[in-house]
Amino acid sequence: MVDRSQIKEHMEVVGSDGGHIGTVDHLDGDRIKLAKKDRGSGGHHHYLPLGLVEEIDEAGVRMSFKSELAEQFWEAK
Image (cartoon, rainbow, N blue to C red; front, side, top):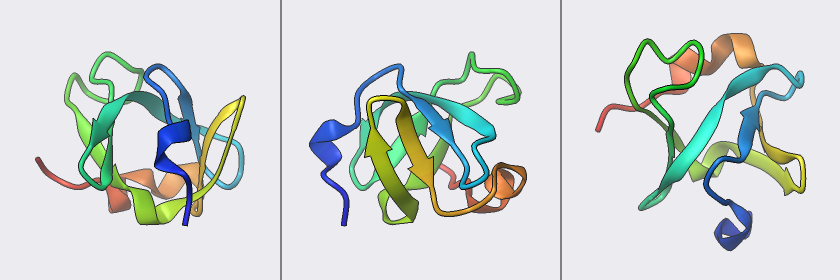
């Protein structure tokens, strides 16, 4: 389990392959809400479960799946 207090607004979210997934807007319960103005978001907020976070460091949030699979893990409001 990750320390959710380490996740900050504007951190980059990347896949296990290092590919860009999005940018943290804020935490919403047990999910990361991604910024809707980020490239690839289509102008919509997307949510990722905290349970899929692999690692958090000064560079950002690394997820446990490849960036190309991100849409499969997006959750609705």
